[in-house]
Image (cartoon, rainbow, N blue to C red; front, side, top):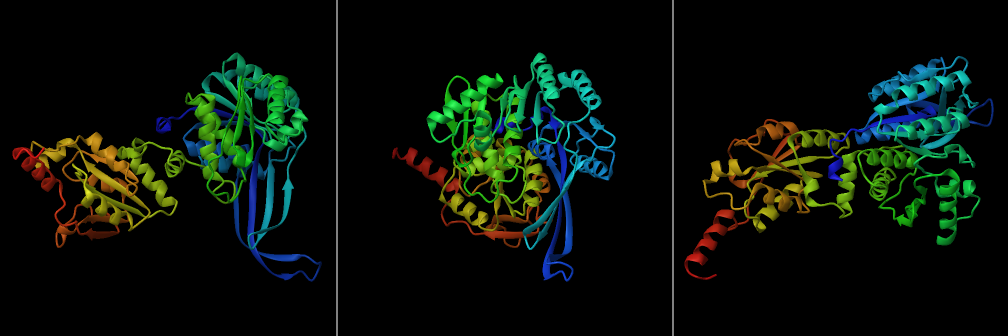
Length: 480
């Protein structure tokens, strides 16, 4: 999955945009006017919903996203455009239809409990004129995109005829179309690359009760045949994702803890589209989508998963290789910012770590205990030679980095090439800087940047130099 780093596929999202609006407060009395709660509002928030949550997920993964939809000429439309602007997605392809209400769903939450929801929206099919504008835009722009995602919430944008035309235009341009479907008749999606119904939706669309492997096979193959799909897919909640092209197989879920499944379907289609656009085959893309969903269901509310979170999550499941924990200066700078936003306390230390020994491991374990994430700055071969002499290092920087990255105490390793790690520490801006106890009373590089400096005593008699001396002594005395 490390190969997805720095990939920014161009994705077109078409579908029903909406605003999810929340009024947060508390209730301490019943209204004297009617037997209803009186909620004192303390906070108000708005986020993108519907197809907007697919966009949020794609942006979190690093995709470049354009959106094509129909909105009204109202205050909600202006708010929606501002929410898109906040995540660096322009609204140039949003078609304004007079008299249409831009979807906004408002929820009143009292003491974390939803009291009522009220919606203002139009759900009838968009006009023929709006459909023609969408078709014209797609025909002129389709070559600019790597993949097309249709997010159908049944609010009237993806009409039967428009959906068929979109898929035809995309297929003619050799672009995959992925659909999060709605309703119980999927024939309007015929010719799409794949659909992402959940089990309940697949039962309704196929009219086959899925209760075992036999009925799963019957339903998934029926959907593939009826809709002329390249791949037939059904999400099975805690049982993972089933796919069928020529052979049926199931990829198990990888969620450790499930707090909230809100928006998990949006995460699945976004991560499938992202990874397929980056060149993954369908099985690898489904595994990636399972990991992304595993991150999201461990959060509260409609959430997203960044690539770094997915890599970290995969690592926690013991499914990643050590080299995925080796970062460049640019990568660790961005990752550090993200970790801080997630409330993580970052610890930094550095060194040559030429021949790894128990003293190193205990030192690193102590350093990790001071925070949540330990970032290790590793001297390059050239800087080790300048510090230790021309016969060092014994092990190359790549070997040293890989071994250190495999340690449970070390979260990330970053090689640096200067004599000191000052520029690296500037990029990370750690909460805690850790050095050996021999720095007591000395100036430590980077202590002006970190919030706190902590010194850790070394294990007596354990050092790379002493290890090398013992090896030389054994060789000279023919002990080996």
